[in-house]
Image (cartoon, rainbow, N blue to C red; front, side):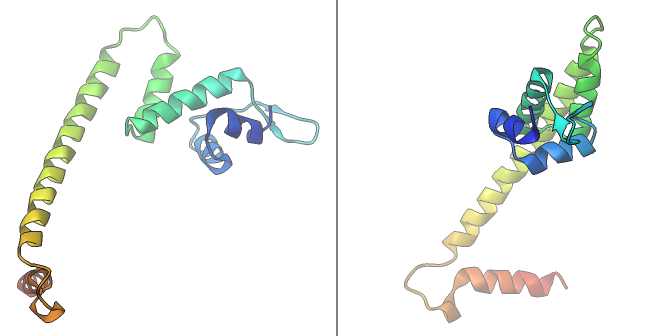
Length: 135
């Protein structure tokens, strides 16, 4: 199949497929007589695997590592487990940062009411004050 059909089958843009090829996550070895890239069902499966990994917020490097490990089905999966443990910790850290951000935004929001004018806006005053303090 050509790249357009692969894109439709996997709900992935042509540009993204080309990017994954450039990053050597997706391999294509066949070409048509017109020099178009040709893909098979293995490419569909690999692209769906990559998409799932991206949905889990795994980096391209991590995905590359998983694809390499996947080619050694008899190996122990301790590397995969360590990678997931590290990724879980990174996600936990980002969640904590997002919770702190939410709390900061709530405090900022409480500094202003709808009855005020822009000149009296507590949010803008706080942001302006913080801007001057960081210089």
